[in-house]
Image (cartoon, rainbow, N blue to C red; front, side, top):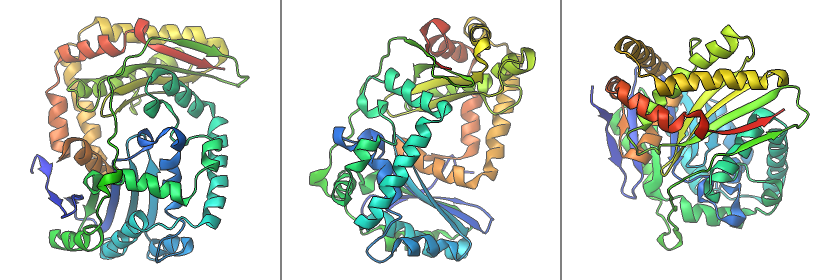
Length: 410
């Protein structure tokens, strides 16, 4: 198996990456390296707004025709926005690949943003923002990021705010797309049972002739991020306490991202034997929902620990968390422990091959960040190469309790 999947570059700079499988179910997505961090001060929320409104009409389709195009052959169409990227992706039978590719190209390159549809979507997104703000387990993450990131591009919410959403129109959306939807920042990713020749033919036909407006391009600015520790506790009248600890972490380009991913998994990954879950839930019965998340960007990263508990258990929970973190920071993992953890993580990584959609999107993001798409075997090799010294070093940098910021809403 090659160390990474082959990449074909179209004449306009769009890269195509393909992961062959034997399944007749195909997953395909066009991922654009433009997200909320590329928004100007008066554009907060527009990347997500565009993600919604490219479904509302193109030069050849109405909103209903867009929705029906894949539905009528049993396929699915979706999209998402992050701080770094926007994606339109679909699942369908391999025989319908050209139908799906043509539809996604039409949506990304030919949206018309009809005002009648935009008016309805402004209300939909405003309701989404209100719903989000009414969900404390979501709200606390936005508020935490707004405080820990000093750079506005990363600190403002992906959804924007209701006031900014009300100001968006088709012209503003088109200007953002002209400035940021660069072909050399786009990756078409396919995972399924389709021949290489068919993929290239279809990609060239529907994606290969769109060019960027160089004069309008403004490069994304990146900065070194440092954060001063903060502690915020607010009584908001919730039934449960929501607690978030976090710290600035390595970027997507730093080697320490791999051992940090491992530590994050050890502490609060999806497995039932994650150490924080055992400490809070199994040993003490004081927390049902606990999770850790490491998110890396081009210039920085963020490591968080979230859990919910009864307000009467806040201090006890924090003591339990602190004890687990100090154990990680003060004790080097022995070879037996290290082998067990690597085996567990490797097993989870290899089993993820069943999630074709995630692997397809991950390949696209990997090409955008690193210029190549690793296969799972190479990813496992990176895990196997991590030493206990590396784990201890990054633990002391990121998980030292005295350096981690804290936000509590109850």
